[in-house]
Length: 275
Image (cartoon, rainbow, N blue to C red; front, side, top):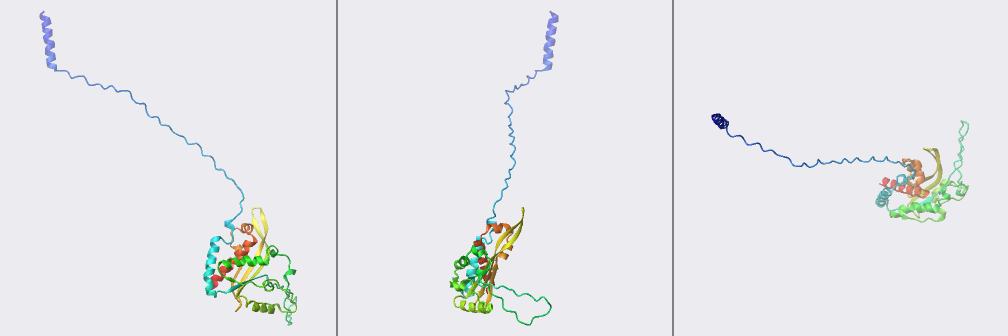
């Protein structure tokens, strides 16, 4: 009995010495976690390889001899220059004079003191066919006159005998004939535009090899009749020399377009040379 009492006292004393026991720590039980986000990676489909289609197309705008913008600028320049020229009357002659130079140099070193006879004048009817077979003289006059009329220039309508051609005058000096012709022409116009039109062969190097084209050979000269001064010149050869692709220019332009383009270049030259 005494032993049990002592054990009880000992247990009580040990509790008093040890002090109160700390409460158990709060334990946190996590709830259900949301599933991790799923990231969907979209793999781009392989781009299709480019498909190249090769085809031949005619050069249109790039091969034009004179563009629309250039034509408008030339017409404006010429219209502004007309008052400085004295508002002249223009006349157009086509293939008016053709002179064949058959005079050959002497084979020996001696000099012939006899003056050479004037070269005979060949009528147009005896010449080989040229582009004028496809483009009549009146069409050339119309194509040259169109830009002049747009620029408000005065045009004189010449009689057929003074417009084109030349009668056979073997007994008359051609230079005297030209002088007389211009004197008669000066009563109707102040400036004459002499147009010589024919054709020539042009060889162009292309991918498939050299190709020969028939190109219009058009030369235009504007002459003031009162003093026989040249106030403007233009030709199709110089016009073609400006083209980056000669073959494309020859394919893309008709004879009519060549003729009008030469007329515009002639008007530009007149406007630039006016004083």
